[in-house]
Image (cartoon, rainbow, N blue to C red):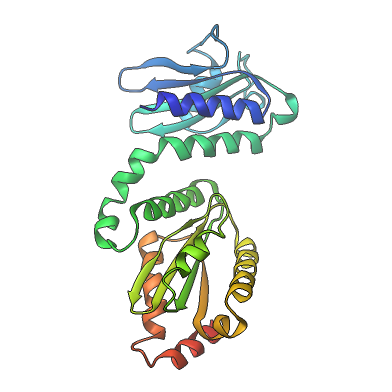
Length: 274
């Protein structure tokens, strides 16, 4: 049921952006009808003939009052399309300091994040079957970040740690040091060897570099400088290409470096070159 998450979204967005009157409306293009699914005020009045609503549906794009010459009852309409349904975030009253494109894009991003869940699961079905060793939630979020990059040009990154250790608790050690939105998967590819990909949502390359510096310092402090130097390597990947290519890279970096238990020297050389 999408009503509950959309009601939460409306309350959350209204609070952080000082929106005083707004609603989320579903327009069914096949049936040509509108339905108010959530609203801040119970007496929210929907004018389906309003120029901003019509333009948002026709253009399938964010529309706001300064784009039209005709009178509108609303200040902005933010659409997200899913098959024949248009989900419209209609803003009637907002603190003028927040009425800007950055705010509207952020609301668009939040809606996209919630409403694309069903499509994402359908789109990644074959990928899940092809990469069974990866956790489904990890693949799902990786795909979601790629879609957000394509639609909003917001960068996310993937940091992949390659760790040679007999300590079975090392993945847990790393996982407990992550930030709130970060997502880690754990792949044990060989006896005493882990591949630990960590997804950093909405984090550019420079942010990923800072993250790596922090994590390697934690490893150095808890284990040792020698352990870090001899047993830990990493790469950073931007989430800017098809995720099948990214998932393949996670393994190819490992197999290029280590073919057997004696491959540590080649492993060091490879990551020195990277």
